Image (cartoon, rainbow, N blue to C red; front, top):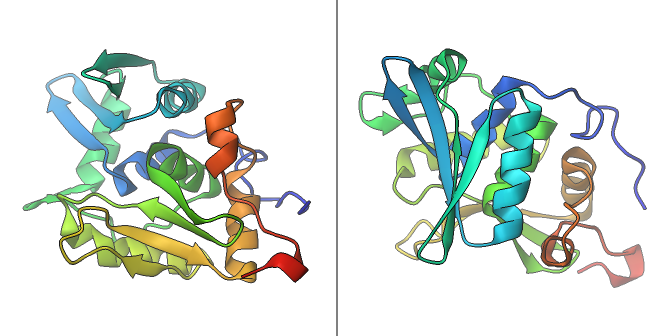
Length: 201
């Protein structure tokens, strides 16, 4: 098992800025006079519970609403989220702030909301927002600057764009960053890990 990174999600204190990982995924903001909220829709209950717990750890309340077989996780409306939302909103909708780099905790919630496994122990994907294609390239660059060079996939009408992480060095760093899976069998089955060297693809 890899040693935990000194800068991994499990060693860093929660911060409101970590919620930017939801916006890197397919989360969106709602702005009101009282501030803003972030919401993200997921298919699995374990994801909803884990994202809501993550949000509450930052000091912001969150609720989960089940609707037609899906789960909508929404934060409380807060002026501090309004500041974060403004950074991620441009003239044409969602935008990636200049110089933004995903912290380890932002990477964790990004995977909680939109991560998937392609090849066990070898390839994992951070999902991107299919309705915000202008964010895909900048997010690939942001992850690269965070020390994990991804491959941008699914940008030609597949509906499942994402950043694929593969290769032992990159995947090991990612695994160290995002920490252990939530306590759910479904989460453990798809959670990133690195196969032993003699089994690595």
